[in-house]
Length: 94
Image (cartoon, rainbow, N blue to C red; front, side, top):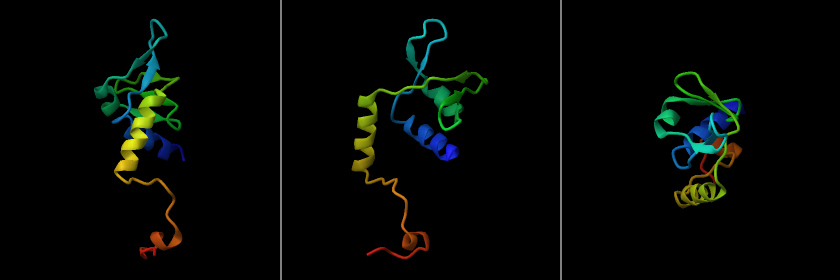
């Protein structure tokens, strides 16, 4: 389950800014796209490890950004529902 959450977070990061507290001020700061591409999410997307090994915690997103991402995914008819048994076996559902 944690691997799935890590993958979903990585996919969402292409559409939604991910924020982590600044080391200096503690104010949430958006992670750079290059860092998101080169790094990876861990522990069910609770931690982000940069290419250089820095681990960022207390990750957040803005609700309005998530709502926009959900709308995009719905418009593209992307479904995250669990396939029924017929779909798993390659049989078309009615």
